[in-house]
Structure formats: structure tokens, C-alpha cells
Length: 298
Image (tube, rainbow, N blue to C red; front, top):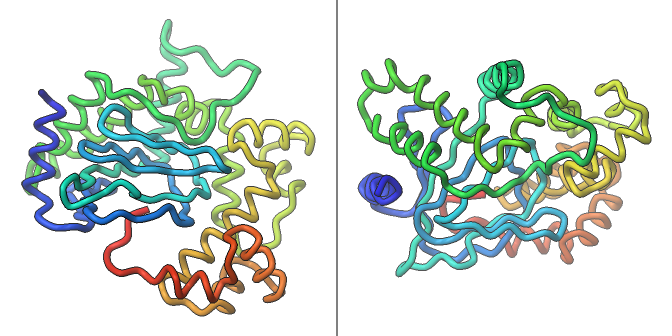
């Protein structure tokens, strides 16, 4: 019943396609009624909850398709391909995007890890991946409904918004995607910190040694743990982040040369070579084929 109530709230707020801001910072509603094939994107830490239709994200060849039975939790910045290939006017995609604010998520994760009898500190072994799907449980559904029920009331949002957003974060940390989120924001978050470092220096020369040093790991240990968490080697990840960012800039109208420089490429020929190898088209061809026709949703 609560999920149906969420759907009703979204249908009321979204009379046409696009992304709508709510009164709570970092919480957006969206509607898509045209199919959009998967295209390069960079997911920032966020939760995406769908109440109607399906959405797809592809990470290193692995496809994550989710609808109203699961929500997606991305706990680290990730280079993906994302789209809404099944959206239609008869079955529009309706959903909510909630950005995960680092400070609050970290406070909650550490509180949970230090609480007596709660969640154990991370043990050695494979790291949870940066993208995870989770079943909607009662705690998540109720927390999301309570957050969206704030509506357009500035007073309610000012008084209750922060607390209700925190409640939703806590539900995510306790849910099926919680292991991934806790390792990204709590104790043992070295890989997430390395990716955050990379994201803020994507246009600068970065080596594996730089990233490993940022985490205090040896090169070999860092390489192994990084691949466990992202499915890619650090070098593959850096290249994908740069090329995905460039592809998004080109699609938005930036020139190929400016996009290449903006993401740290010095050689235009190297950029074109690597871009074509990844996307099957030259940057110019790709830009012509992917000019946005309307509001874009990653």
C-alpha cells in the first residue's frame, strides 16, 4: 500500500517528462515516456527507486535492470552506461533519485558499526561492489513515503526534511545494499576514498601509485581490492571515467577538442582512438548521433 501511495505522489507531481526538484536537497522525481538507449554516464553516490517501468545501468558489461521490485544503490562514483530502453507512453518510467550525502552517510555508518551488537566491522575478503540492487523492504518503503509526503510545504521540509532523509539513509544501510554502502561510507572505505580522489582530479595525470598512496595500500593490494569493488582495474576505471565524462560533454554540445582537454587528454589523436575503441564511433560521429532531444536522465 505504501508503494502505491508513493506512485500516486509521483503521478500527481509529474504531469510531463523531466526531472523535478523536491523541497529536500538532493531528492528529485523523474518521468520518462520515451525509450532511451543506454549511453555513457557517471553515477554519483545515490539511490534510484522506480515505482513504474524499468531502468537499466551497465557497468563493465554487467547489466543491472531494475523496476518496482528493487531499488538501485550506487555507493561510489561509477562510470556506467544508463538508459530507459523499455519506457513508453503507455508505461512511463516514474521514479525518485536520492543523492547520498557523504557526511551524513558516514556518520550513520560509523554509528552502526560502533553500536553494541549491531553490525560488525568489515572483515577481510571480497569487497561489496559499488552498485547493488536491493529489494524494497518495509523500512525503506515507509521512509521514502514519509520523505515524499513533505511535498511542497517549506515549513515541513525545514523542520522535518533532514530527519526524514536521515531515516531513509538508515534504511538503505540496513537493507540488502547495506554492505556496499557501509564499506563505501564507514570503516574500511579506502576504495571509495580513492574513487572520490580520482573524481575530483579526473582531468589530471593520475597513476595507480597515486591512488594506492592515497589509501595507504601497496600497489598490488590496492589493485586487487579496487577490482573487487568496481569489476575494473584502476587503469580501466580511470579511462572509463574520463571517456564517459567526455561523451556526456560532447552530447551536451561541447566541441570534441574541448571535451578531450577538459577530461585530461593532451593528445587529440589518442583521445579519438580510445573513444572509438570504447564506443564504436569517433567522438564527432558519436556527438551527432547523441544530441539530446529533451531532458536527460542518467
